[in-house]
Length: 490
Ligand code: URA
Image (cartoon, rainbow, N blue to C red):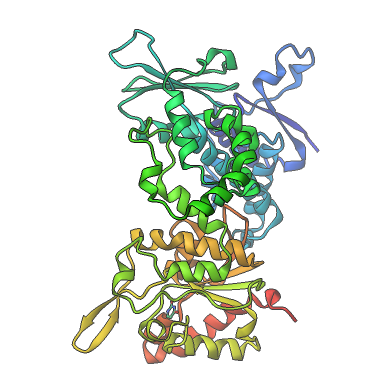
């Protein structure tokens, strides 16, 4: 078998990969015959002459790929894993030779690439959360230059820069990292080679103010060191000014919470300093809400949800309808929002949609008591028509306001798999719109925790279907749901 060594210009050279892969496919070179290298890795290599770059001059037609493939490669290539190019090419090759593979969401190569992409997205998220700018008077403009030092795990600087550009458009800033630096001068992003930690400025006068704020918002009664480490991993601490306070605050927490209990409740506002530092680093109230929800048990969450007014829906509903089922059910079922009956009775899926769901559950030989049933939105949204309260779909903003409740339920129940009933559930669970008509019956994986989510129609869609189409749609729905049977305890 003819073997090829294919060289890419940089660790994130997607255009180079694309072009090389097209030529390799056209020449029928199987993945096992290709070695992928990086140009800079060859510097000084005396044996580099036998490297065969693809015939760059001959244009090659692009291969047919399913819609998921290009964005997956775009993200996965940013991972530091040296075998990522080989994995991308192997999946591309297999997609050309095994057309049915495009529907197999659990294929090992696809899953491996999705795992890389998930890690990259998490790294990008951490970068957006943990970059701390320090103002430096560089004399280049009327406002200071804000400089940050950050050490990402993967090659994410280019991909994350637009976030900072959008967020800090009116600031001049630079983010220095060991591999790549990026600067925004107010009009243009410029990328440069990596820098050294010492190139970033030391703590400045602005920092004590931020530290004071952090110290004040640090509530010892809520202290959960493990969770704090999960959200703010230790390896980021050395770049965060507030991290220097964590150890002494943790040590003092026990003593402080005792004192707080003795003191009794206080007005929260009084505990905050009057002036806050740059918004850049101040966590918003939702951060603290999310933190406290993450530490609550299911009964505490259920009780707290009754008072939720994070969006206007709760004001008009009879009550919040929280999830129900075994606290550690292997399977979770997520619907859209309670309907009229659920709102009055306080239980999920007890109205007409719930009855249809119960019928499907019985026909599949399942027992509803075995799984945890909940909704993406916890209050009933409706409009009054005559004497009836008609269901209204919650807006994206309303559903997002409710998302922390669902995420907290998932974190507590820790299901092995989730069934999404309908588009709202699918979108909230996956963090992006999902076409239920196209994807029904398929398993997708959530980015944040890798949980498999089975996409299915909402039972209300079947209730609305025309008489002649309903039986077939119901049969298809049963077939889709049946994919979850492996997660039903025997
Ligand atoms: N529809 C849903 O999505 N959830 C319910 O609980 C009831 C109807």
